[in-house]
Image (tube, rainbow, N blue to C red; front, side, top):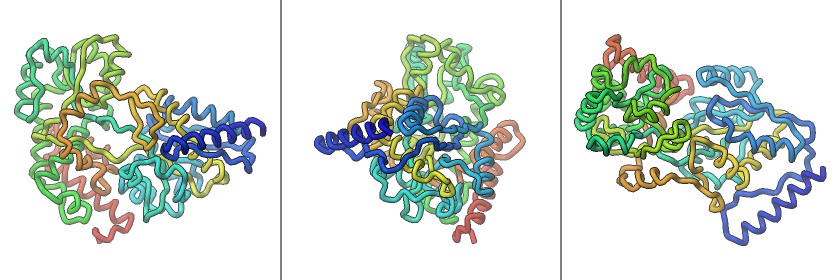
Length: 441
């Protein structure tokens, strides 16, 4: 295996160089004692979590080790059920992914000691910031690898040029937002583009502002996580849901927003037929790439509930090694491989959606947008300490889609606001009992 031996020498050389420079541990010496030729590595992942950004890295992995990668990308709405079936029948892929947060390993995988390879002590463990590691560990053991971005996620993105031309001010309260939406609607432009048909985006307006709920009821997250509080009857949550419905009733989300998906959202911005939408900061680049728009764009915090909190999120798609694999050494080598600086740079450079990776690697060349840096300068650093609601509370993210369906039913007059919240309590309780959470006994 001449090719593999050359890779090991190259990596060893790179390791010496990095140690000399005092950089993070983010390179490895490939396993030169194991011949992987002819083996196949299977990967099970939900659509959108790897995409094209991993293509070059997977191809290099195949070439260097003379192996085949079987990438099984599953539609998002089918992934969770399929993964659970694969785990239950001991037929899972060598590598599988989940949308992880500090509670998801227990609630999604349920028994990580049975299903997951223990990576505790791996060379790449400290590549992840401590906030990321919390979503990858269970009972002080490292099971997952989370390589995700640290950009502003699902804040309000707006056409700054359009705002300036019309004298519109960025809103900081709900009253200001409602007043702004009325002014924008008077011009024939959709104030806030809301793709309800996607099924997962509209509920971000409720969940991304977790700090405002914690601020209104100090200790709420801990109380929710110990079954000492409920979503139902929470005054601030009810306030936000009712504000959302008020905007919907006024038509500020666009005509038939419930039946509209995000497929044309970049064109809506480029054509100036919408003024705002919830999006990741990197979506600015997509608008310009898709439409050639020369307008300038900016971001501000979602002002529902008079929110002033940044959507901190120590969560993201996370990959795990399946303990039942017949290729454990190859799985471990793959995790080593994707955490080298070369692979990380490749993944970032090939990602159309993200401008940075939240990893401890000083060698990585990040691509922060000026708009991101400008927005972050406006955020109170003391308002970045509370996680978004779905990742700061147990069993909540597991019922993301159901909550979104209930929000739509509420907007259509088929449910009451408190029923939407009560359903989440019921679902969380069922999940807690499934994993034997003593707080729900």
